[in-house]
Structure formats: structure tokens, C-alpha cells
Length: 82
Image (cartoon, rainbow, N blue to C red; front, side):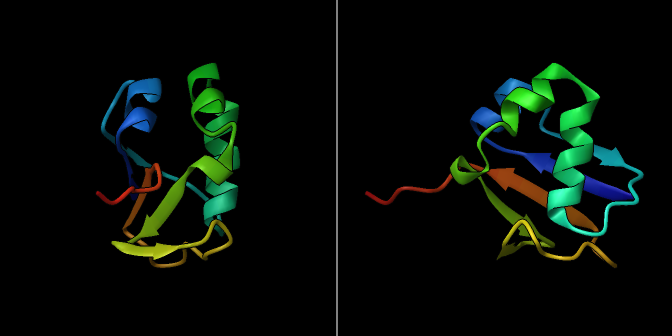
């Protein structure tokens, strides 16, 4: 089981801040593929990965990052300073 967290407009499109999933995905990208296949709202939220950042166990990483042993994946838009 893995906790998947959604922030900002990702949360708005999916309609929830987090969920717990049982996944066989080996990488973040494979998890995204599973999520996209679930429902249209996930497909919309993950339609442009260049507009997203991801963290695995609170460490910023890439979509090709492995999920083995991970407890949490978070998806969020890029942060802007100011």
C-alpha cells in the first residue's frame, strides 16, 4: 500500500487530497499510467507531466524513480518564488 497525495490544481481536478492505493507499479511513471487508466479526472490531471512535479517519501524526484519500498508519492505543480 502506498499513500498518494495531490496538491493545488491536481487535487482540484481529482477531487481529493489523498488516497491509499495497492499498486504493482515499479516506477512513478507506471503509477501515473495506472491512475490515468482509472477515470477521466485522473487522465485530465496527469495529461501534461511537464506541468507536474513529484516527490517520493518527501524527496523531490523524477517520474522514472522506483517505488520499491516507498510509502508516499506526492504530485504537485512547480512552485514559483516571490
